[in-house]
Image 1: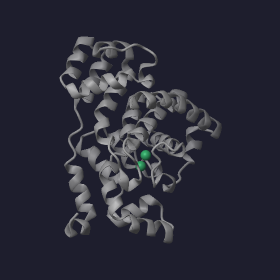
Image 2 (image 1 turned 180 degrees about the vertical axis):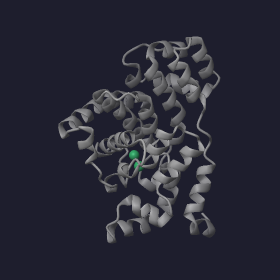
Image 3 (image 1 turned 90 degrees about the vertical axis):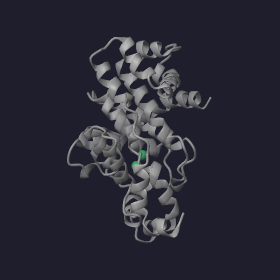
Length: 286
Ligand SMILES: [Fe+2]
Ligand SMILES: [Fe+2]
């Protein structure tokens, strides 16, 4: 990295974010078709148009978390057998995986760990949403799977300025997020929000990405932001893609009280996630 680049991490991080490939549109094309219960052939035609996404949909739809034991041998099977909600989840995951698969050494995350964290947080929203009777499951899943998109870019800069960040954390007792923002001029929530806006993601998803560590600062979509915050906290506390910053993020856990979530419920949610993710982890790594 040249001297000029190092002198302006904010400009370079934003510049790098602008070069991220656009988010595949197939997910926004499939969602309305699924909602109006369009014929299978119509949905299949949209997904098949993108062979890379088709291949990923097939791999993900066969994972135990999504297939729930159903035998899926073709794209048509996936569309017919998964059901509306799970099909949208699988297509969303297929569209998102490319961005998260690599390593993020600045956050001490090895290859695949950020992806596992994203999947775990998203599956956790499903578990909690089922418990709370949450109506917008697919929006929550999408927001959760993309919540750390800013890290996919910012890890380069966190790595380059790690000592300065940790000096603020250690000596000035700042949270990692505040230190990130002070040293780099932007934190991974803010960078993620910029990426989400550029991708023209729905407003609730943009807000959840932008405030997933600080739900109380969100002016809109507070319930969704709190849900993503809580699911991220639980996945990190379970050591799933926790990274160097996971235990140094702001604590706004009193949102649990507002959501009616007790410590015993959290134990149950974590146990459910272990069951759901354990099989998927084995499948995806095989
Ligand atoms: Fe985060
Ligand atoms: Fe996270």
